[in-house]
Amino acid sequence: MKLVKPTLTEIKDWLLLAGEVEPLFGPMVDDPNFSDALRQAFDKGTALSAKSPEPENALAGGVVVDPSENEIAWLAVAKARQRQGVGDLLLKGGLDLLSRTRPVKVVTFAPGPGQAEAALGLYRKHGFIFHSHSGLNPAGLAVQTLVRPVAQAQRP
Image (cartoon, rainbow, N blue to C red):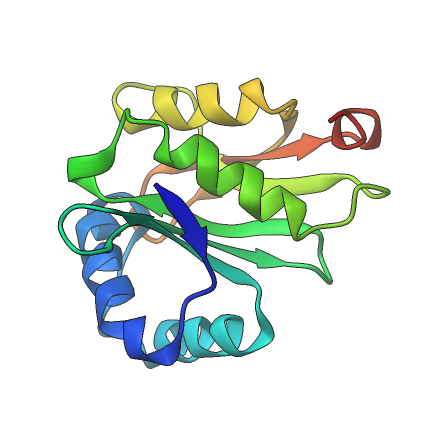
């Protein structure tokens, strides 16, 4: 598995990945604002693709960061690649694109069954702690904001 900066030719693969996670994240594929945001992230170098060697550099997941907010803006792993370390690789890569001198934030699922526990476990492993309840996401699922304090961000 390797991390690479995506190119505009990969937008279709990213939209397919977004389609897999729409039940958890809410509508994205048919939202032109989402496609535009992906293109901007690709152009700015604030996105990373996790590529699996088989089959032929398939997209295993992606992460988009917002350096101005020092935030993990979007992270998704293809269903076929979940629980294989892809999320960990993406999160590490995304954190490398952000400032280590400021807290890092992410909005993720509130505690609950299924994907929530996997996501929370991933973020906790990397030093994120609860910050605030954040209501419901566009899919109607409860979400919360987690923060990785500066002391955690400076660890190797």
